[in-house]
Image (cartoon, rainbow, N blue to C red; front, side, top):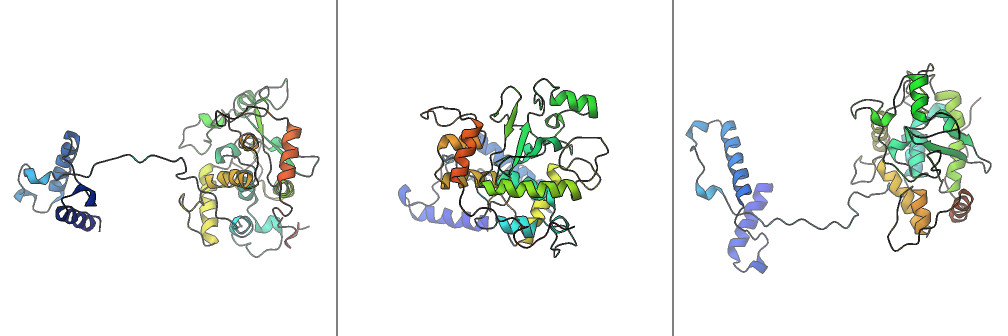
Length: 347
């Protein structure tokens, strides 16, 4: 098909000598393009059935003129797709289910809670996927407003206690491990770290700012169920929050495989273009704040960006101010908990 289109546009260019009327105007190839054409010729010759009949060198006509190559200017929006509007509830409650328990009315039987919680951290908390895999069990506590207080500590310098050991020291001394970002990308423990803006620069952690606030309440409910019924014992071998059925730390690859199955289960294609890959949820979070007319400083802090446009005034907000702003912006009807949709806690 590509060859046919090329031949057709070449023919059109020959019919219209005036350049402004040509669909596929051509220019003389550069020396590099000639070398590439020569390489392509010999590649084809090696694979040809009657290659012994081919000439040793291509005829001059082989090096056809080529289209002028221009690099399109990026507007910064390529690949920045949000998750399809109106489908997040379907993904969480109908897509991310456990095999064999899809029809159960009990939350901790039906849902694959670890993957639901990770998805919520991105979609309603704005985290990057890799940041979710640095979370320890102790990093999530109930908050006074009914939501879950979630802190993501720097995997190296983070200090959960003001005068306590760093995360690196704890990993090494207690578990014989290193920060997950130091493992090779092919290792199941690998989880990157992009140096986000920290909410506490002395203890090196960033806080999840739930939007809407009701998502933080639902996360709190599901977190308790996850710890009680689905977090498989780690045998004291690691501190990470999300585990596989063997008790090993959950992997980014494992999550992406589960997400793909969940997306396809609810009838959506799994692709970056469709906005159904993991990073789309972070974009959904930022878009939700923008749609609520949140100030650019609020969005910057919520997404833990280190800077905003140069013309903006830099004014840091306190935890109390952030919470008040997000509470004010939250829609009256937010995330509907599966418990309120008819699923039960179970006994």
